[in-house]
Image (cartoon, rainbow, N blue to C red):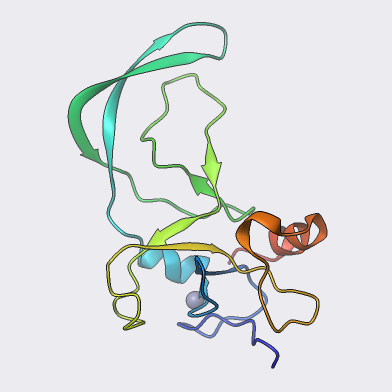
Amino acid sequence: MKIEYVCSICGKKNVKLWRPYGDSAPLICAECAEKRQSPRKYREKVWSKVGEEHFSGEYTDKELPLPKWEVNEKGKIPTNMGPAPEGMTMIPMTDQLIVDLSDVSKAYSSGSTTMIPACLTAEEDNFWCYTVVPEDVCKWWEELPTR
Ligand SMILES: [Zn+2]
């Protein structure tokens, strides 16, 4: 059976969708994910510059709340490392979103579910495993509008 590529929450079509790691439902769009992002913390780091574009960070004992993320046009958000040092331009990004689905799904009520890009197979009846998505399918997903 073909999978309907629509957000399970708001019903939006023709946008990037994410799915829980190891499952095919619920599907969620960037905007619904942003509204449900799980509050996260990071360990504070003290940065020192060790080269043109290189910084070295040392952890302190402090845990701080991470700022809220917004999904960019490529479907990515900054990783959970906390704010980058001033002057650092290469910020590590991820396409995995951690969200609270407790209002959407009984199966995912933990408050923090890892969602990965939902990349359809050619038959549109299944999704590619996260680590083996072919390049053209990655591209198809990346080129879908984020919102
Ligand atoms: Zn949605």
